[in-house]
Length: 174
Image (tube, rainbow, N blue to C red):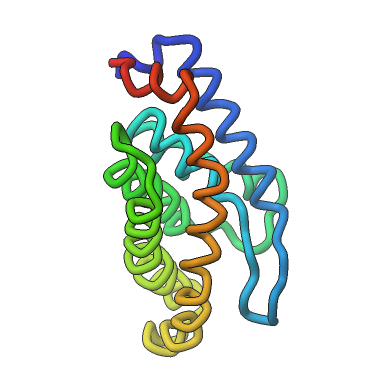
């Protein structure tokens, strides 16, 4: 992991973890079930800048750090796995590629299917004892509604970052 020997990469990664933890505390409630959260944005940005391993690390450490700073329930390692997988998904779609609406939408759809509806629903059913299908039905509409919202949020942040020299240099770091 030679990227972590680069001071710029290490400091950027540390800042993305801190930003993801802080943004995890903010949410905009739309209904009792639907809320806009912002903690995905730094994970997606790290993934686009530095690839799947560092994106996954930011996702996982943001989950652990958020729990340490402000626990909102019991710690469950499944959500840390979800954080790591979200970094992998965003990197597989965005790393070393042009940031476009279609690409960000595709990343968000993959994230929603694999993490939002798949893994997180599984973790909730394990944690609270209900069947997977009960949680899936409760979460399905919410996750579908959040796809365009999260896509728009990510485009607002990732598109301007992708045209900076920092993004172009980060993509070339080996």
